[in-house]
Amino acid sequence: MSGGERPMARRRLVLALAAIVAVAGGGAAVTAVSAPDRAADGQGGAADAKGLPAATAAVTRGDLSNSSQQDGTLGHLGERKINAGPAGVLTWVAAAGSVVERDERLYEVEGRPVRLMYGAEPMYRTLRTGDKGKDVRQLEENLAALGYVGFDVDEEYTAKTAAAVKRWQKSHDLKQTGTVGPDQIAFAGSAVRVKEAGAAPGDRIGPGGPVLTVTGSERVVRFKVPVSEAESAKAGTRVTVRLPDG
Image (cartoon, rainbow, N blue to C red; front, side, top):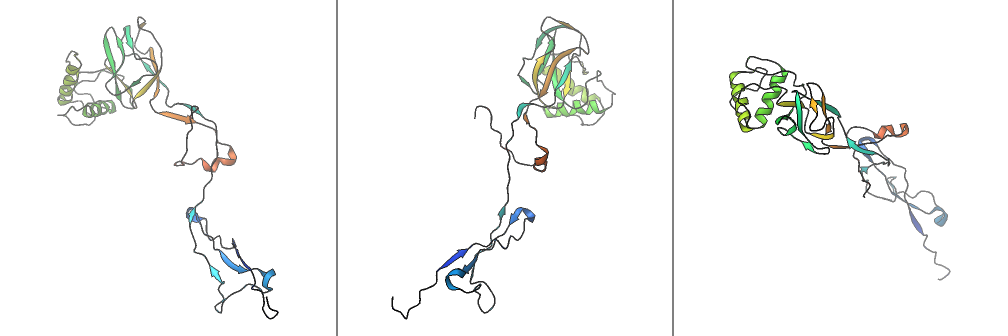
């Protein structure tokens, strides 16, 4: 190097986190500024005639995220009892762990099955032509879901409803009375999973006596979130469940 030459000053890229623009809307923006190494050239911040930094990088936007890990308990929601409708000797009951869906058997009394229908109202009376109420609508909604037609889904049990009930009874080899009560169906909000039986085949049961303990059929995980992380426990938050077997 000749004495008249001056070494070129080394410059380094300084990522100045000076412009964290926003966290609103789930994003953050950062400006990367190219600035000289002051120790190398002895000058202040280099800028062009317009006062802009010597170089800039494009602003990017991304999602901020956070996560935590908690131990949980795998189970089912909505535990409830299914009580007997008719009186007599229990001859069959759904097995523990089985899932019972609409129009499937829950239990049998002296060979006569009681089937599941979906609805929030209990089956507390025998429904017949002229009856009105929410339980009538529930029955009609189930008949319609099973493909029976020819009646209006409302809160009135008409002759057309009775005709649909007769067709349903015929499909299950039942006496076609056009009336239906707790001796033939029980209501639950959706498909149920049998947790345990409250009686065994051969037991004599009476109306209102416990026959089955059931839960919802969907699996759920319960876990406790520390108060310090309560903000993360909001509806819609995505979670990943890792079961004991990996």
